[in-house]
Length: 308
Image 1 (tube, rainbow, N blue to C red):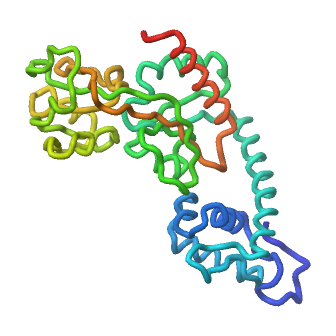
Image 2: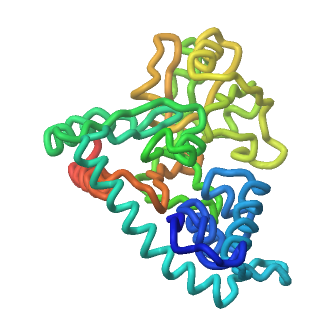
Image 3: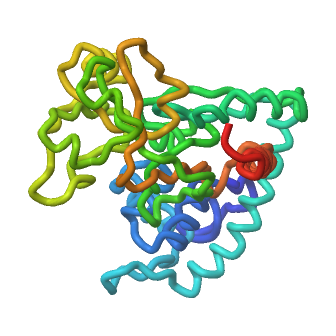
């Protein structure tokens, strides 16, 4: 949106010359999030970089856009007017880019860290392919799918912890998963139909660094087991199968991480895990809303049909 021509004789820093889309996105994020820190997180940039962008915008326009005199940032009257215009401008740009993306048929990328949607994953993707063969859906494993979403590496992210408020993401709850214990097949408890958290208090519990479903606080105070961490799913499964530890995970692992040396048992007293489908507020893939609706419909139909 840089102005070219017609600006001769204008004082440096006055008017709209040099204002770019990145300046408008920065101001919109600051107005929406309320702090430079949260706006920087939403935009995926550093706090100092965003502060410089704000100062540059104000310098190029020759007016103050943000009041910094209070603990929480507030837009000035000029800032609010520009944000109103910026929303319309950015919406037009995003729509134009989305139309271009749709025309090129770019795949819809779904990031996950551990078990995707367990037994629902394959039926979901097959049904999507049948209904929208023009827009492939790709599932991509990422150690931190939330960070991958913020960086634009994926269009949607399956999360088992809700991102903190003010981070620029929209989270749609999909389902609740039960937690299960993962035991060596020759463990003394492996023959039971289910176990309780307290049954594991005397055990060593291995935690996978890429999963967010297990922590010592699951156990009652005074009955918390010794825990240690391994970097990935393969190490987690091997550690359990060899009898060095037990594990706790979400039910999706029983479908996506089967191992001949590991037996999964329901945890009768453990809280369930909510699975979220997250996307960014702006710059979304044009099929985002359709894929979310597709996913929720399939999960609702599966729930109505009863357990497999």
